[in-house]
Amino acid sequence: MGMKEELLQKIKDRSLVVGVCGLGYVGLPLAVEKAKAGFKTIGFDVQESKVNMVNNGQNYIGDVVNEDLASLVKEGKLSATTDFSFVKDVGFIAICVPTPLDIHQQPDISYVRDSAIAISKNLTKGTMVVLESTTYPGTTEELIKPILEEGSGLKCGEDFYLGFSPERVDPGNLIYKTKNTPKVVGAIGDDAREVIATMYRSVLQSDIHEVSSPAVAEMEKILENTYRNINIGLINELAQLCHKMNISIWEVIEAAKSKPYGFQAFYPGPGLGGHCIPLDPYYLSWKAREYGFHTSMIEASMMVNDKMPEYTVERIGDILNSFSKSLKGAKVLQVGVAYKQDIDDYRESPALVVGDLLRKEGCDVTYYDPYVPKYRYKGQWYEGVASINPKMVEEFDIVIVTSGHTKIDYDMIAQNAKVVFDTKNAMKNVKNREKIKLL
Image (tube, rainbow, N blue to C red; front, side):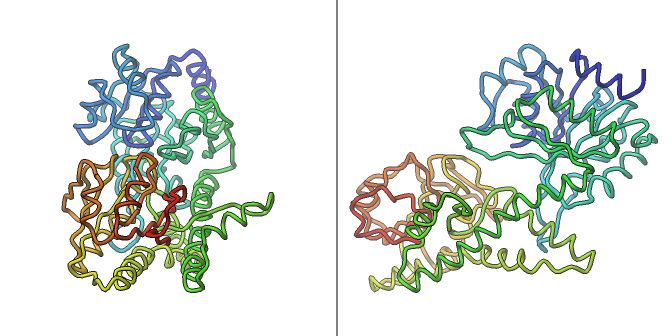
């Protein structure tokens, strides 16, 4: 029996041991789904705190059901470790580690590289390795493949299979989770693609779309998020123009949405947040330079979006000036610091930038977020207030809404605030709008 047939049989009878490298927003939900599908699953992470929490059945990811994690650990189907020597025991391992930008806005693939090196030292014949971390086209074949081959002495396609299947995680999405979101799979060679796609089909309740190579799958992921980046950039620019023309961009968008074809609604805001949309276009523009290609449209949208926090602060200053109040010394209540509504994720949140810029302008900033009691930004921790009430709201010169959480009493804020600057149109259902200014 050849390697392909042996792996297909192990997938079918659930004798394959699965590994997931990186137990964050992508990795832990994937590990849980693998274990729920009947595969013994080992999670690998360099953070001992995460490993201990998993092994104690303690959940720290919003998209994972607490009871699912606890029961899987108790039944011995899921465990975690910092010891990468256990990679030798797995027949499938997914790399789900962060791919941030460095201080020069260039791709930081150190987590991917380090993970590949650690895996290569313990890689055995007949293993599938799949990169899920978002990255630039070419990473799987140009970076991961040589590392795995050199570190293990094995040959890709003959001794192990290698592919790329981009993560599609939307924290807080009530409909689409890891299990039911369609998956794209690209691999080096037809056999690798068939086996890896079969592995995902055995776990997920969604379509598995196969493509011809890892590079196609890598570019597909970049396209998904660059598409959103560009369209949000367009809306953010139009929002600034509409403000000058005394037109509500929010009303314009609602009107455009009435067209049943050819239009998809995007919304303005104080900037872009999360682990994908603000970062992925930089990966593509960086890689494009290798080919002497200038991604002008992409870079233009990135410039617009990156400057939205500054524009937000300018608008706050203008609003305060209309009340004969300057930014310096102003008491500001910031409502919401998560990068999107109803989640505790503040990665790359523009609200953090807005808060930082306001403090640099001399503002006394207090924040409230029911999902984020404290956050760290530029090496410093900030702690929010536990709750807000009418008397407290009255004390501030301005209230700014920078995350549109649904569990906040916006009517109370509107009634008691001196003025509100709503950057997310979170207060659209508030009837008394005299004090509300929109982005």
